[in-house]
Amino acid sequence: MIESAARGPEVVLRRIQLVLLAFSALNLGLVGACSRQEAAPAWDAADARCEPLARSVPARPRNVVFVLADTTRRDRLGLHGGPADTPRFDAFASEGVFFTAAETQAPWTKPSVATLFTGLPPSRHGVVSHPALRREKTQMESDLLGPEHETLAESLAAAGYQTAAFVSNPWLQRRLGFDQGFETWDESMAHNATPGEVVTEAGLRWLRERGDDPRPYFLYLHYMDAHSPYHAVPTAEFEARREQIAADLRPLTPKARGAIARLARGPGKRPLTAEGAVPNLALFELVYDVGVAHFDRAFGRLLDGLEAQDDWAETAVVVTSDHGEALFERGYNDHGRGLYGDELDVPLAARLPGVSTTGPISCPVGLVDLRRSLCDYLGVECQGDDRGTSVLSDEIAEPGRMVVSEGLYIAPRNRAVRDARHKVMYEPDGRLARGPRTHAGGPWRFYDLVEDPGELRDLVSEGIPEPLRADYERLSAAAKASSAGPQTKAATTLLDDETRRRLEALGYLDPVE
Image 1 (cartoon, rainbow, N blue to C red):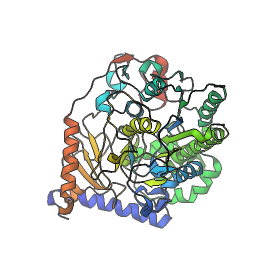
Image 2 (cartoon, rainbow, N blue to C red):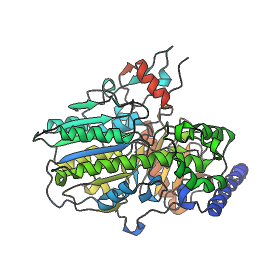
Image 3 (cartoon, helix red, strand yellow):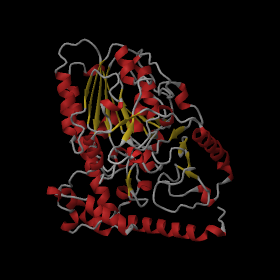
Image 4 (cartoon, rainbow, N blue to C red):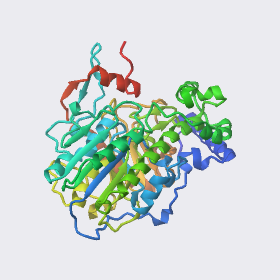
């Protein structure tokens, strides 16, 4: 690699950080548990292939249960080599089909779910603005999903489906347009700490009360277990990892340590630091993993209830997330601030009766593809300006296929574009995340996701090897074209005080004085 003398100190500092990270992981035996880039999946990479899903019978209307586990990053799940206890998801995915390179199109809920529902990238549906940027005294606005966009639920309702949704995220409100097409829309549980079992029971109760309705159904369930404010860490789980936490030497800023000390709580909301816990990355990873495991248990209860239904054989189940979560590995936490895999990589698995494909699929796919995929799978004509690609079509496996992510509320022109192996990040609006603002590549970064899945080695800074130059230029051209494209402006509405308080508690907004 060619290194510029002008950036010598930056390169040296980064190498020191990498050495410290590797040293601490090796000494602790935490390579699989704590280090994103070293995690080994629970499936053989040789089994993953990029191919369209194959039907075993013609498309026909079937029940669909769509499960969204808010803020769940792929690499923390057991199936994908993570330390979180997720046996129900792992078994469900292993028995069906799962995708190893699924990406969200926006690293926060509102634009991400709008993309999921419409098949449009955030710049096309326009639901991207954060109300904190529109603060006016004590009132705040939010953009809304307009009626000009046909949602998946609207398409299915028009095709004769009974539709229902039970949501626990305050962004997903009737007044913000997310209920379009849903016959039943229940946002009563959209409080900050609704446990997943409440969402599961609401969905199963709705199924029991359908009676003899002959229509197929579309049921959307939105869980918040992995989202802050995080679940309390059970004493037994903390004790099981106490030695690992105490020995974690990965570098962390004092500000990050202070934040972890506040966020890491045990039973009764007692700070774990009061139990002798060291506020470090390993502790925060445990806090996050407890929430992921909590969702898994709620998901398991849902599967048990669905399997008891008479129509289980004709019921499809899809499970994914709207975005991931930064866990201080880059100096910051939360989401909506960056386009690294920490915030973009999501799980995606499905049980699809009538589809013969099983196992891992390595084609890069996005949430933007799911509306078109489900319409194709069900044989339903879905109207609207859908920009997705069906996972049952040959297009999904085309060489050079790219997936674009955007949707940052402070930096709307920033983009991430990936293909099967490489990823470009383009940041013309600057960096949201804390860290060096100057960069040898200007607004550009380039990563080899096979050799460096943790996105730690920026090949623009190191010097792009000539064999990779064509891939870099192709991805960067796509990023630049997307960034320069039209940006739809959505209509807005004022947020009510209760919604504002809920969003404050979730960390989306600072309290209004």
